[in-house]
Length: 184
Image (cartoon, rainbow, N blue to C red; front, side):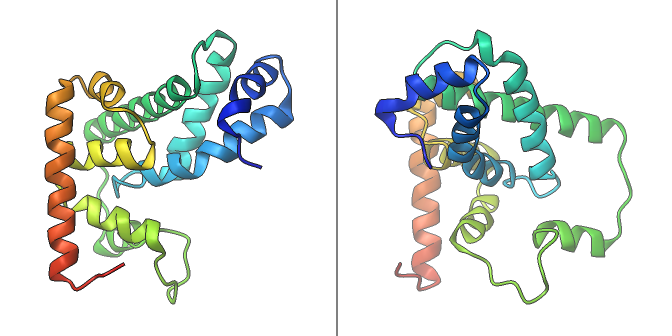
């Protein structure tokens, strides 16, 4: 059962006190969006990075203070840091992979060959075609539902730069969808 905005503070307090059911509700509410966000980078294993993120969140849960927006920002900031750490680790120890491994990563691992992509997968594919800053901004604004100021602080950019990146990214996506004849 998702956490309703009006009960967030109570569920968070219970989770911080060690209530597993309350933490499960927080996890169930945010983890799907977190994994979708982490799938933006095809070389990352989104599920592993999400698990690492939640380990960090559990370790710092009792110290967290803030509302639901601050919670989302904290969890997504933690995930972004795990992804950046992973990218740095991989760049120091590059692994050679064959084309079939890359194809499997891009095509979402662990899915059957006849798998039809859902809307989230299609959206991630579209985001991957954007410049990195635009993709990050659109994902954090749309998938994580974070406010402009929070995204700006996470990315070390001004709120104006975030608004411009979001506008350009969404405009590019709209043009691409229009050219492809998507009318959803």
